[in-house]
Amino acid sequence: MLLSNAIVLARMASRVAGEGGGGGGFLVVDAEDVPFWSFWWFVDAGISCLLVLFAGIMSGLTLGL
Image (cartoon, rainbow, N blue to C red):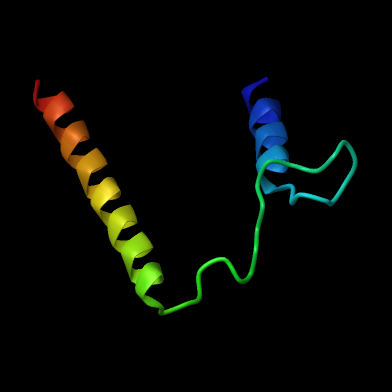
């Protein structure tokens, strides 16, 4: 049962707005969203790295507790 739920969730998450039936999906992919190697690309990448590191720190603290 869990595998079928994971497959359905992955299909829903990968659906692009405007494709398929049912009014599209909730994940919109735009090739011109943030230009690669621009200032805002580095800001987004830096924030993403900080959030991943923060999640790892919180996970380690939870295990230590």
